[in-house]
Image (cartoon, rainbow, N blue to C red; front, side, top):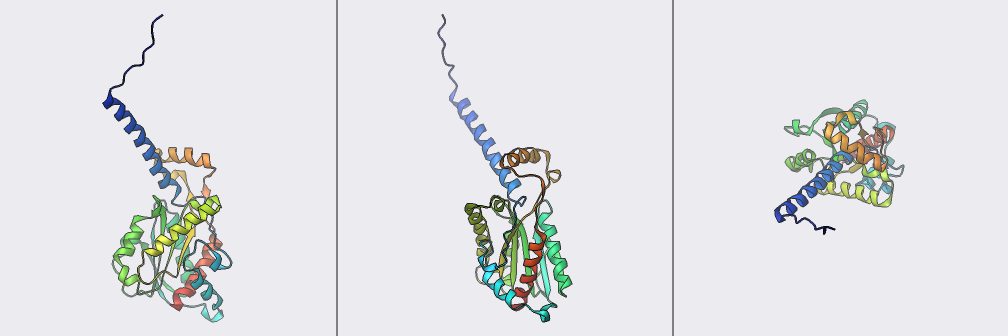
Length: 250
């Protein structure tokens, strides 16, 4: 009987193999963040009593503004800049919804992508939206705040974001979403936003490249996230109404 002997693997080949496997794992991790976090199944936790909402930084200001809203506050006549950073279009559509509702209240709205803004001169307030990617607010949204920080901190500002984290509806997920809101608020060193609110988004595989789509379907099917539009438009409308008052009161 021949003795079975383990084949010796050259050290360089062994290290290369380990590196390849680690690279695959890191790549999958990046894709998970890219696919999951921009906002899919998450449902907004916008509460009737805004100051109990754990994801809404600046909620006390909103609650006070809501209590002071009356019939004589239907027209605001502010010039508000609404900007967005969006990969698959969900955040842009939320920004469009907010814009249309504020226009209906008598405000003068300018809506554009964050990269299109050249100046904040002439605006009374700003609303900034962006998806969460790689565990952070989208880079273009953060760059916008940094670029125009002195002007933004001299006017009332509200921010919103979309992320999948809220879909799990547990304390850990709420704490994570609260962390996103606090990090966004921390981008403003002096005057903080009147609100930083999380909203749901859309999972649409057709908008993804084939490699991303394959990995997305594999991972999201395991955790039970189905394709669909999970945005809560009434909650978005409610937030817009209250933020409109908060921006006008600053």
